[in-house]
Image (cartoon, rainbow, N blue to C red; front, top):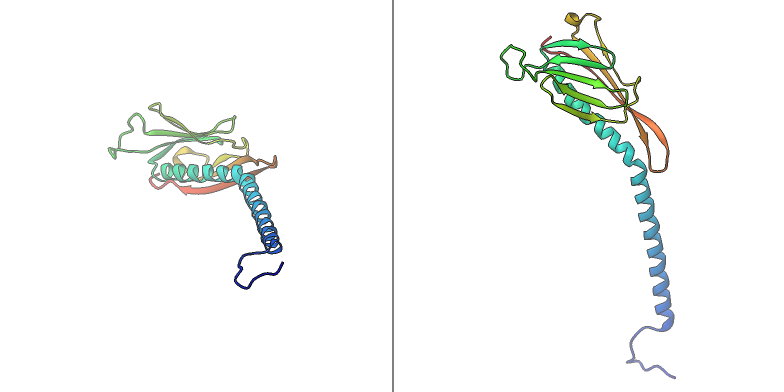
Length: 171
């Protein structure tokens, strides 16, 4: 059969080539999306641990910087008085204790009964508080080291840590 010049359209060969190119591009896109998804899930636990540590660092830093005095100092906990109402009198709820528990949680407790967990999966024994003096009255600087245990979706484990030193402003 002869083609007429006015016939337009694509031949079966052109259609096959277009389908082949489309299939190659689709396969490349699926592979790329799978790899991106796997990378995101591998680092999800790591990202969450670091976010928890950063939030804990921010909140504990705020409390310790505004402390009027240090009421208790141990390796796994610190208790400070934060005069929230600026009346120079220690009211109920103004004594704040930060503690690393043996089950790996960083807790914030007040003498008024408030309780909160700001971070979990901490490595007990490697997360601690340090002080510039052994005497409560002489403490002006508090060091904090928080180390969290991380397990990725792929089953890889490791630790992430964050540390800070805080000068107790009002002590």
